[in-house]
Amino acid sequence: MDKERVLLVDDEEEFTQALAERLENRGLRVRSVASGAAAIEAVKEIYYDAVILDMAMPDMDGTETLKELLKVNPDIQVIFLAGHATLEKGIEAVKLGAMDFLEKPVKFDPLLKKISQAKANKAILVQKRAEEKMKNIIGKKGW
Image 1 (cartoon, one colour):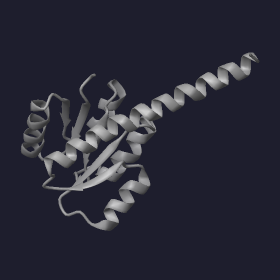
Image 2 (image 1 turned 45 degrees about the horizontal axis):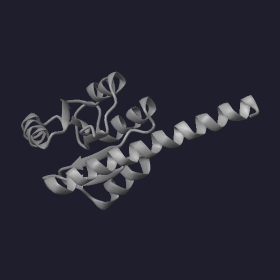
Image 3 (image 1 turned 180 degrees about the vertical axis):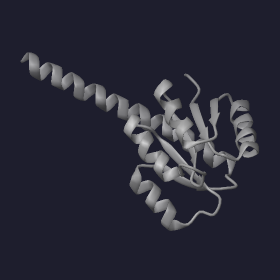
Image 4 (image 1 turned 90 degrees about the vertical axis):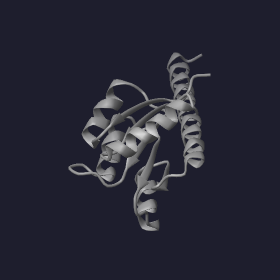
């Protein structure tokens, strides 16, 4: 089975490098970008099983980035990270379409589980879309 493909989006370069290294050591394929705009371009180029997105970034914050990512790919699985998480921020992120919300410093094992869950969620969504497409084709053909 393919290892998860992860996009890290955080303007804190040291944090991103350290987390990317740990994920890569577990066999995951990781790309890191430092802004919301770069994340949007990255998801246009290739699919990711999970996007780990910092809530607080200059220029385009995590919330705005999430909205734009969902326009590019409505099935994208986003895990928000925040330095000073609050219940309200977590609820807002999930309502907007994030898969989950974790607080920095992120605990590594729960993050790995969330990434695996994101890949599974995405597979289910892709399967549902394929089934819907087949139903539409069969319906149009009248078989």
